[in-house]
Length: 293
Image: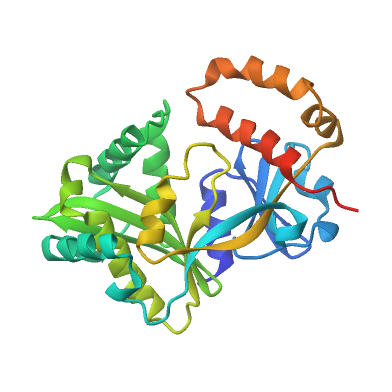
């Protein structure tokens, strides 16, 4: 259940990983660094931004105390006696129906790769997100890099032998992080996501070495909040945390002036690219966070 296992995975995927003052950092997308394990709350006054950014980065994003960053949240479940009564009533009914129709089990990463690719496409289309040109190459590499890495696990929900949903999680220290959750559009009527997430949470939280299961932070990308509704219904809660953005000095001038609007207009020609919306979120959150004294 080591953090080093996730560091190994990231390096295999081609990410740049740095360990600065005992904390791992990686380029979550080009030029932007985040720390892991994700549950670690950092002190802004102890962050050496220039060392983290190196020569290739322009921004860091990290969790901190609420009062020291932009108010945000992590989505976690830490109910040790987790069961159907931990769910909201609507999700509970859907989950019961899902459990009746779905078989949920842990898989190997070299199984069902082709089916998983189809589920990934379905999910992106359903969420109105673009499919990148390197989609198939990236995801084949993702599954291959997960094989044999400590802390990585994959679970699937099946309807009449067909993969209807799957999740990938990484255990780091005493927390399991669900990083991927994908499902097949035509089989959603059987509630495979409910059956899958419920079964995973029930079995994982029963493990004494795990204190919580996390399914990420508030998204910096606008319009993604609706995805949190399903998670809360399944027994997750929003744990308050601050999120802080630090950038190179020259960018801080741009981010805090009207030049940010000019940059946004220039980049808006790529509105179908998720990176545009994430960069826009960086600018917005940077200006919403408190100044440190």
